[in-house]
Amino acid sequence: MFHRTALISLALAITACTSSKDSDDTDVDTDMAGDTDMAGDTDVVDNTIVGIAVATPRFSILVDAVTKAGLAGALDGVTVFAPNNDAFEAIFSALGISGVADLTPEQLTVILKYHVLAGSVDSTAAIAAANGAGNVGALGGSLDLSLDGSNLMVDGATVITPDIMASNGIIHEIDSVLVPNIVDVVTTDADLTVLTSALLAADGDASAPNLVGTLSGAGPFTVLAPVNSGFTALLAANSLSDLGGLVGAVGMGTVIDVLKYHVASGALFSPDVVSASSFSTLVGPVTVTVDGSMVTLNKGVVGVAGSNDSVVQVVDLVTSNGVIHKISKVITPEAK
Image 1: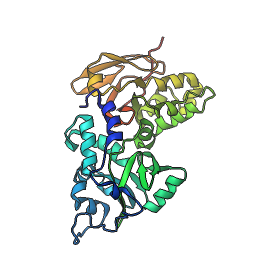
Image 2: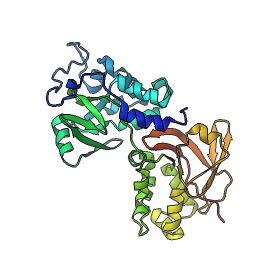
Image 3: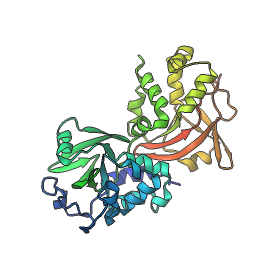
């Protein structure tokens, strides 16, 4: 479990993490990592991304994280911004945890995906992107590439060893762990595609609620994110075929309120939720029922769209501006 101050500490860690290397090592023009023998072992047999990481002592925590998250098979034909051990130790300290063992596979996946680009992007291409739009799409969200003098920066982290060439991709060593924001996580999670569509549809309304913009802001926020099957259940309960039908049935204003009902101000981690009988969202209160290890939101509450009794399925997905909990159903404010 995380401390209540985790988000504040995390923000400090993102800006304060430093490399153990000398500043000369951060020059992407001079340190192009022609010495891809990262482990000091010229007989490395496995020259894949995972093989190089395994053979490199300063990537041992990254290897542990990838292994626990079950993502080793996905690191093929990709570019990895790889935090070294010092970077991981800094974020563990900020979160008040001891290491990978204190994080769930789901929590690790959210963070690790944010470090991976599809395809091979060497430092030349990355610098070109930094000099252009600056944004590149990672598997876990949108990364900001920039230059600080001759140093290539990724979301504020410094690339300290670029262009470690693997047989199936490229590794760039970085000096801090990158953490996605809420929108990065929601819009890249295969379980939350309907929620993403609903947010985008709401923002397209004439009232311009700017939900995506808000959830990209400083926060912190707590998001109760219904999985795709939760939206399917909501539509089925109201004999509707799609989100457009829901808008037609209850109006976009109600849909926007329902979406806001899934957002609370502040970062409420699982201990905060479990210890409360209810908590406030942007629209109204949500009740909490604990039965053993099962936590249910709005149990027995009759909502405006008929869907509640939502079980919390995945907890404490840490982001740079809050926390996400995946829930089994769309919850709706109590009918008046």
